Length: 171
Image (cartoon, rainbow, N blue to C red):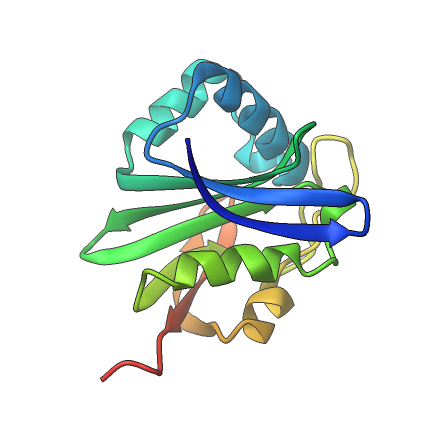
């Protein structure tokens, strides 16, 4: 484990962002539960084998876990695809709207000049518990991502748009 950053959620809860090139089996079980709890049920991974199969398709992956001593509540990862750096972020809903996603994105941006990701841009999906999945598109726009309307995933199971962030401080 490499401790990447430490910060405070509030006066009594200290958190860390740790960076890992690979995940332990225990971490994978925690992240599988987080994935299935927070993403739309269309994206559910049925078991650890499904998660491992998905992760095996990713190249040059780096994982960032946001956690306290007691629990892991956010996971971000970057990977290479089509000569670009891509990312995904999942934050436990009970920790959302506290600036933690922005803090996690800032960590990802520190080592990259560009990040691409897929974002569901509508409120048509439900999570596995039946609650409506809330699109994070406004979060990404607030964090200087641009929507690429011409690049979408449109399948019977999933509809999402590509978002891209470019470091404007380089060059």
